[in-house]
Amino acid sequence: MILKRQNVDRTVFVPTMVLFGLVSLVLIIGGSAVQQAMNAVLNFLTSRLEWLYLLVYIANFIFFMGLAWSKYGKITLGKPGQKADYSGFQWGSMVFATGIDASILMLSATDPLQYLQHPAFGAKPMSSAAYVYASVCGQFNWGPMAWMIFATATIAIAYAMHVKQLHVQRLSAAIPALQGANVGKKTLRQVIDFLVIFGIMGGIGSSIGMEIPVIAKVLSVITGIPDNMGLKLALFGVLFILFALTVYAGLNKGIKKLSAWHIYLAIGFLIIVLLVGPTMRLLGGEVQTLTLMGQHFIAMSFNRASTGGNTFAQHQTMFYWGWWLSYMPVMGLFIARISRGKTIRQVIVGMLTYGVGGCLSFYAVLGGYALWLQQTGAVDLVHILNGQGQAAVLAAIIQTLPLKLLMLILFCLSCFVFLATTISSSAFIVSSFTSLELTGKQQPTRWNRMAWVVIFILFSLGIVLVGGFETVQAICTVAGFPLIFVAGLLLHAIYQYVTTDPSVKRASRLAPANALREQLRNTLSESK
Image (cartoon, rainbow, N blue to C red):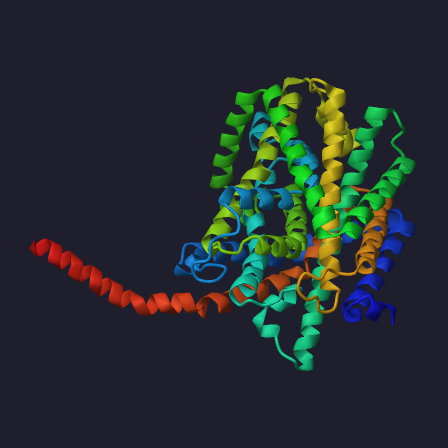
């Protein structure tokens, strides 16, 4: 009765809540045993099912590259001749701001240090060649293939929403093959919606589990408060209050205002590091990295950046491929909503420029700066990473900047707002997926939204208590696995949509007449 009164779809809400409630409990009380189990799962997926992750990413990338430059790329995601809701820069800024997460502030600085010790392409650890290749694989993992997995949900939802004029509250509504009133199709839709929420929960939980220790470490450096579990629990308390306020306020009053700040904080921090650091060296190093990434793109696409016993690069790519998949539904729904009036080609090219360009800029600046500090001997970041972890590396990097106290505060605030924005938006979307039919501008009930905030916090707390970056990697990889099959269904849906699109058929019918008209025009001009 409570669920019905709160407009909640119990067929999706209840099993998902029960599953993640149990998982959270296991994580909280399991300790090191859970960490060992997670490592075993990660090793199984990377050794036995690697081919499946690679298959969907390679096929997806080829599909969208072909789609963008085919005749179907000209299809407008809206009514014929409809003007785009946002300019290219406005649209790109929103895509970039929503697509990046606080984790890039950490991983863009620490990934190159990891690859320095476990280099790809046959380089020796800590050698000059290792420095050259240190950022290549990391940027590949945040590059074109990664961003194109977001296009899978984006184009399917945008076409259904803006061309077919369908009400897309859940991802399953954008898949034509699943529509219908019979029991089988209804059950499949519920399964798809469950898998989508499963993926979102895994990705979001991993983000919080990765970033809370970083924020705690930076806060400890700023305030002198011991970096212990008490500080982390206090941060969870603050996050809960912040999430509750933004989700309770709703999309426009809460989440929209929070989103407006995080991009400015991150870009401001990045610009300061670029100007303070060896600017020309960072820019020149990025040109070299992009050149090498182009040369080794095919090898990295097949996850063959290194061979023999060094499997670090392979494990990293699998982690990222699972993580990007888990965020696919959230990003697809958001980008689709702001893409009305744009062509399919504009959306794909925009994601490749604004999205990829934004992510690679973090690696170029923060990653490049970290490598410069290590290579010049200014700070032994590798020693700090191996002894104290990723959070300590970030604190050490920030302390090399002028006005270090202000920079520490800016970094910590940027991470916190990033995190709050991502989680609040995701909680809103998950509550939409688990609601019954929402009409017009109706939003999910506050009760539904608050329930997901609680689950997000408990699940993430469990990940922090277990500890270890390998745990985060395993959860991301597992969370993304079911969405491999969802991605396949979405690609089929897009193919159905574009090949039956009325504007393409109309253009095909007019093509012979247009060609004849052009030929006559040329003949007449030549006779004159």
